Image (cartoon, rainbow, N blue to C red; front, side, top):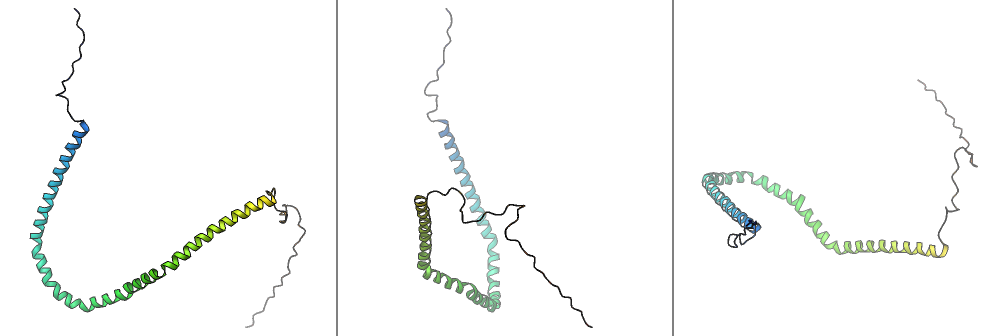
Length: 172
């Protein structure tokens, strides 16, 4: 008897029940969750260490800031007044005026847009009416004269103007 080739089939239990892409995404999700947990742990530890190390500096700055602010208070008050006068007040006035004039602005803008639309429609209607009543124009208008050709004399010759230059003598 001759041997016949046979195909070996894998049993259904050995084949994965999920597609490979699903397994890949599950593994990627686990890796991202582990990385996020690690980063959170490192960040909270670093923040705790920084708070412990920087707390004495905060106490020193708090103790020094009161006298420094007391000394600088006239300058800070002047700066506050200048900022109020130069920035806040003009901004408030401008914003209130813009708020009050917005309806006028909107009306004028809409009016201009509608007027442009009516103008284009009137121009289109005029050109259509012209085509219907007068027919299409074939050539250039007969009211405009032809420009003179180079090398030909025109009917209007220019006469050069006579200009006299008088010299003055300077006396000393």
